[in-house]
Image (cartoon, rainbow, N blue to C red; front, side, top):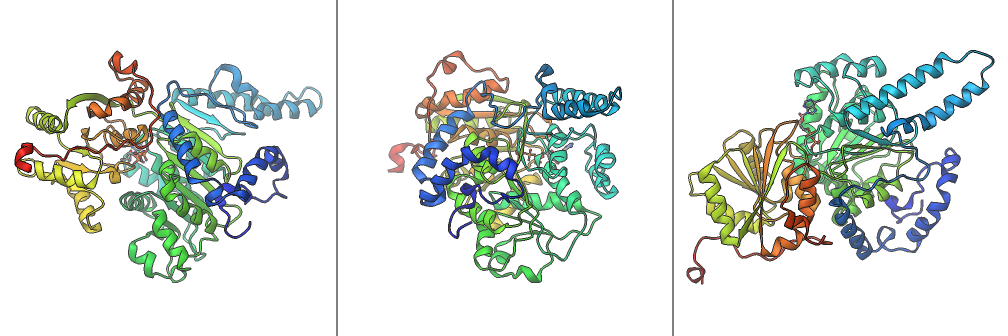
Length: 540
Ligand SMILES: Nc1ncnc2c1ncn2[C@@H]1O[C@H](COP(=O)(O)OP(=O)(O)OP(=O)(O)O)[C@@H](O)[C@H]1O
């Protein structure tokens, strides 16, 4: 590939000779997109075009029902009745059968049929939907990791120690996909165990530590999430000497990775790009690249950084995977340009909220009304831990100031704080030292606060995806949770988008809201009056 062009949009980084058959299948389709890359400036398409696509995708996130898409060259192995028997596995079996002499109606074929039926039933039971060729069977239990993939005892022991008795639906399907050496797009609700779904196959495939340098990279959109993923990864690797490193600011700026043992590197895109630019990190041997919260990573602000990481991971047999609770089509389409023969795994419906969360919309009238409603609800029933989301760091500071003297143990986290302060805020909340944490969207994604009972959207979220991730901080791992969203007059045009998410996940929504016109929104962050109970004239 030519210097300077974007990896993400080029779609040419696979070995055309080796995969000539596959390539010819996609060739016609790719002519257009490759042309765009050659003609283009940034990443093959203009930023305004990207914004347009992103806006359209926002629309799609909340569309109900979710469109069923069938991609060219893909065979659905979903669970729609007998269609499962029309898969390519079956076609192959039928062909093999024809070629067999006489009456040897192969046990092999019968067994394959039985296996397909078992797969189909298991997928139906766990609401697993797949697209792709020859999708590996889902896991029946964690014991399958040993019987089918020779999993080492340390890993099963760690699962048991963590109290994980059964794989979650996403783990049932995504783990075998990655263990079979296939690339993967995975979309499953918040709190449904996606982290283990990519960490477990990484550890199994890498087997042991090696001196070959970095062999796996996990990218997360925020530092907090990267730190949390590193901790989870280390917990799972306990008992096997892997070198698992979190890319800190100091490492990104000063470390020479050729002198550091590191098997798995976990980083934000920004920090990894910094290290790549300094030429202190060699990613050419990376075998696994995971993009967690992938739709966030593919947003405009991070795209350039992702692009340079993808480019630096130049191993031609690299396995890439994308995980998120929200996976708009434009992300899949971008990602498809760099992925080969990927399997798509969707749990339940794409882009929906967890069904264990009770969701409520509350009209607060005005900014002052919000503060009164919040105080009232705390007075009536404060059920900590509670997370409150606001739309900006300024508003986080203001609300913190308002609640500080109310006999409530309150903390705040936003991007104006030093890293150590941010970590303390999260740790205090986790440890129960603070009951209420006021946050911006900096912790809306991926953060696993196990016991959060209630999420309050003090400020209306700026997109349906943001709503899904914010409220997904409660109701995790099968627990129940409550989400309350305040709205004012200026949010009403955007209510319908949230209402759709609510109704898809089984919550009741007033009919007048469902009758509102669907709004194509870009980021909805209106200017709001400052948060204060001081009368206006006193402020002046
Ligand atoms: N098999 C399992 N059985 C029980 N609990 C599990 C299992 N796998 C993961 N968990 C727990 O479920 C919780 C949520 O997992 P995780 O953080 O991976 O969710 P997620 O799907 O990545 O969520 P998000 O979309 O918000 O990032 C964690 O506390 C994790 O320890």
